[in-house]
Length: 168
Image (tube, rainbow, N blue to C red; front, side, top):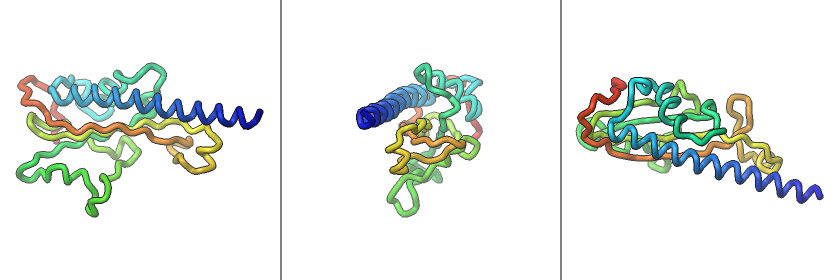
């Protein structure tokens, strides 16, 4: 019987992660589309406003906006922008790590024609004894979590509307 309960808890933990990941992918795709077409409103003029009014508005009910970390960067492929290499670590073996603290992440919506890279993370609570024993999670805000990650790279369309400018 204890083995059955352990297997059941593991299935629940895995299911929660997959559920959060799928919801995060959808919310990230919707948020990137809003940026790409220049449809951001004044409420999205700050990173916190963007997180609450664009990303969290697209999350499935039941997922907490407090568990979201966003990082939005833009670049150009010509001139001093650096292209997509600005998103890659100097050793070119991984992406530049994102701090899991919203006060330290980037928020730059870019201008028409610039390239954007939106990363959204969701802190999924870890309650599985196996995940905890294997140290699959990390401590974040005093809780054991594992981060689900969704990312979208895109090019801003040549929008002519008065979209929000973040001054970057």
